[in-house]
Length: 112
Image (cartoon, rainbow, N blue to C red; front, side, top):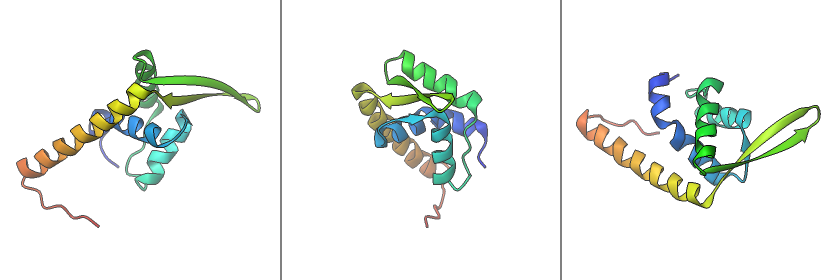
């Protein structure tokens, strides 16, 4: 597992990328998808995820729809057109950041 410090700096990018690839997702679904895609190396906590989702919603990057599922209310998040643009920008920025860090720290990447 990675430190919460590393995850905090990339959380918006992770959320926006996932939502740009999926029609809609609810919070728990996002946490499980991230856990699955990273083989458990990244586990998002509710305390980190929901404030970020709410901030993105307040900024007009995400919209929400509440649905009754059985006895539960589920809040689905959908990315807006502005959000999709932001997702591309964030992923590009992160790619450039990673390239800079690889150079700066003189890392030899083990891909595969």
